[in-house]
Amino acid sequence: MFKVPKFECAGVYHCGMTDSLTARFHSRLDEIDVDAWNALLPDDNPFVSHAFLAGLETHGCLRAEYGWRANHLCLYSGETLVAAAPLYIKRNSHGEYVFDWSWASAYERSGRDYYPKLLGAVPYSPVTGPRLLVHRDQDAASLRPLLVQTIRAAVDGADLSSAHLNFVNPVDARALMEAGWLPRFDWQYHWSNPGGSRWRDFDDFLAALTHKKRKNIRHERAQVARAGIACELRHGDEISAAEWRAVHELYLNTFAERGNHPALTLGFFRHLGAVMPRQVIAVLCRRDREIIAMALLLRSSTTLYGRYWGCVENVAGLHFEACYYQGIEYCLTNGLMRFEPGAQGEHKLARGFLPTKTRSFHYLADPRFRSAVGEALGRESRALDEYRAELMAHSPYAQGKCAPLEASTANPGSIYGARDRVEGEVLSAPPPRKGRGW
Image (spheres, rainbow, N blue to C red):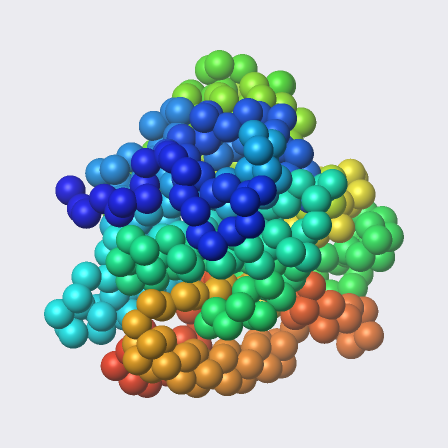
C-alpha cells in the first residue's frame, strides 16, 4: 500500500477561494450526479462522460492494486457543481501513455518518493480532450485557472511530488501555460478529412496517396479477402452477449500474449454498449461464423477513436484492415472529420495517418527538480520537431493532395519517437513498451 494523501477522502477543501466557492474531492464519480457532471462537458467526447469514467470504477478496472485511486476535484457554488477535473492518485505510471519513469527514477535517487502523484487524465486512454471542466453557464475564464490553482495547492498541501494533466485540449492548455506548468508534447498519428468533404469514399481517399502507398493498401485489403475473412461493424446496441464475450476474450488474449495487464473487464465493455450504444463500434472479423479478430472503437459527433484490438491468429493485413481501413471507411460513410487510432506506431504513417501534436502539462513541487525537467523538456521538444520533419519527408500523400500542417497543429502527452535521443539524467529513454499500439 502507499501513503494516502490527506485530501483523498471526499470533504470540504478550502484553497484561498471566495466564500461562494468550495472545493471537494470525491473518491468515486458516482458520488456526483450524472446530469450535473455531464453539464460540465463542452462536447460529446465519450471519454470524459460520467458513463465512461464511472464505468471504469464500478466495473473493477481501477483498483488500488493497479495503482489507481479516484480523487475527482469538484468546485461548488453552494450545492451547485460549477467546475470539475477528473483526477487520480497514482502509485505508478502505468496506463498513462505519457512516460515519466525517468523522472521518477531521478527523483527517488535523490532520496524522495515520486509516488504517489496526482494525475488528471482518462485511465488507459491516450485521447486528447477536456480536463478542466466548467459548466456552460459559468465563467470559464475564471474557473479554469481556479481549478489549476486548486490542483497545485492540493499537491503542496498533501506533500505530493507532482501533478500531471495528460492529453490536454487547446483551451485547457492555455490555462495551464498561463499558470506556469511545464508543457510537454509528442506526436500521435491521426487521419483527418476536414469538414468531412475532402474525400467522398475510400477510393477517393486512396487517390490522394502516392502510387506506392495506394498499391500497398489495396494489397493488404486483398490479403484479408483471400483469407476468407469478412469484417462487419456493429454499434453497441447491435452486439449480442456472446459477441461481447468474444470481443473481451480477444482483448484478453492479445494483452496476455504481449505480456501486458488487461485491466478492462467484460462488465465494463458491456456497460459501454448499454449506456452509450451509438458511440461504441466493434469491428468483428469472421471466418465463416467464428470471430477471429476484433477492433473496438468509440466515437463523438466529429471523431472516431480506435482503442482495443484482439485476435486469435495472425492473418496478413488483418490488423490494418480492422484497426485502420474499416475506421476510415466508417468516417467517410458517417461524415466524421477525424480518426485517432491510438498511441504509438510509425507504421500508421504509410496508411494515411499524419503526425499530430498531443500535449501534457506538469507541476513539479520541488523548484530545483522542476527547473531541471524544464531544461530537459526543451531539448526533447527540439528533438521531436526534428523527428516530425523526418516523418513528413515520408508522407504517404501525393504532393498537393493533403495539407500536413493541419494534422500537426489540430490538437495541442504520447509516443516517444525521438525521445530516446534526448540525453541527460532527468529525462532519459523510457523503459521499452511491451506489445504494440494500434
